[in-house]
Length: 321
Image (tube, rainbow, N blue to C red; front, top):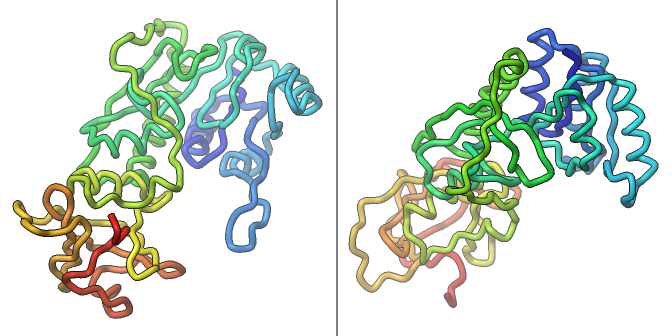
C-alpha cells in the first residue's frame, strides 16, 4: 500500500514514523511551510518534514490546496506531486490545511484522519486541551474516513484512553500520539475488513483553537476548574496571573483543604510556605506548587519564593476585580 502522509507537528511525526517502521511505502509527505521559531526566530522545518527528510521522502509545503484560492500555483504543484505519487490512501494528522474535495477524492481509498478524541466529542483544533479543561475522565483516538465536514466523517477505529488526574496537555499528547500511530497502522492493515460507522448525532462538541488570552487565571472560578485549566494550558500558552505588574505562570498545583473562605477576595494569598502558595478561589483554594516569572525557568514554590516575594494578604490577578 502506497501512503501519502499529511501532517505537521510532533503528534503527526509519531504516526509517520510508525507507518515507516511498519513497512508502508510513503512516496510523498505534505506539511506546513517552515515557520520562524525560537529566540532567533529562524525558519524551522516542522517535525514531520524533519522526519521525512531523514528518510529521504519528497516533501511538498503548499500554503493552500485550493486550486481557485490565494496560491493557485502552489496548489497546482501539489496536485501534480499527489498525482505522481500514485498513492492508495492519504493519512492526515494535524496537518493544518483544509483538504478540498479534489484531494479527498484523489486516493483510491480516500483520506484517513487520526483524531485525538472519541468522536463526535471534541471535533476541531484542540481536542487534547479541551478534554482536560472540561474535566473529562477519558479520551482516545478515532481513525476517521474524511469528508468535507469538520471532523464529521465515518469512524473506522477508536480506542479509549483514561485521563490521569495529573495529566497535562503535554503528557496526554504523548500518550495519544503513540496510540494514534498504533491505530493508523492497524487501520491500514485491516482496511478491507473495517466497516465505516457514521458518527452519532448526539454528543457533538467542538474543541476551539487555544488562544493566548485564555491563559489569564480567573480566580473567581472554582479551584477544580482553575486546576483543569492549568493542566490544559501546559505547555501552551501556560496559565498565568498578575502580581505587582509582573506576570507569573503557574504550572502545577494541589487542591487545598480550605472549604470555607469567609471575607476572602478571589485571588487573595492565604498561606505561603515551602509547600506552595495557597490562593483563594471562587470555590475552595489552590496551592500553587510550580511557578515561573517572565524570562525565568519553572521552579518549585520554595525556590521561586527565594527570588519573588509573595505574602499572605496579597491579591493575584486584576486587583480591581
